[in-house]
Image (cartoon, rainbow, N blue to C red):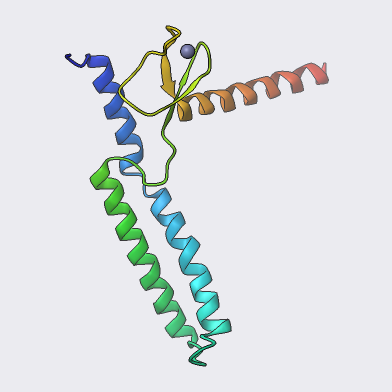
Length: 139
Ligand SMILES: [Zn+2]
C-alpha cells in the first residue's frame, strides 16, 4: 500500500518537532547532576569518608550532566523522537486513545490526531474561555 502524501507530511512534522528539541536531555541531565553535586559536596561518600571540594563537585556534576545530555540527545536524534515523550493518538470522534502508529483512522471512522496536539489546542481553548469569562464578569 502506498503511503499518502498527507501521512508522510504528518510523520515528518512529528519527528521534526521532537527530534532536535534539547529540552528533555537538558532536564534529565539537570535532574541527576544537581543532586549529584549536593550529595558529593555536602554529604560525601559515607563509605569512603570522602567529601568533594566545591571545585571537584562542580566538575563531577558537569561530567554527569554532559554524559547524560550527550547520550540522551544522541539517542533522540538517531531514533527520530524523544526517548521519554509519550506518543499517542486520540480519535477526534470517540476520544479513544491509541498507541502512536501508522494508522490515521479510528474503527469508528473518526480521524486520529496526536494527543499532544489535542492537549495544546485544549490549553488554547481554555485560555480563550477564561478571557471571555473575565470579560463577562467585568461587564
Ligand atoms: Zn473513534
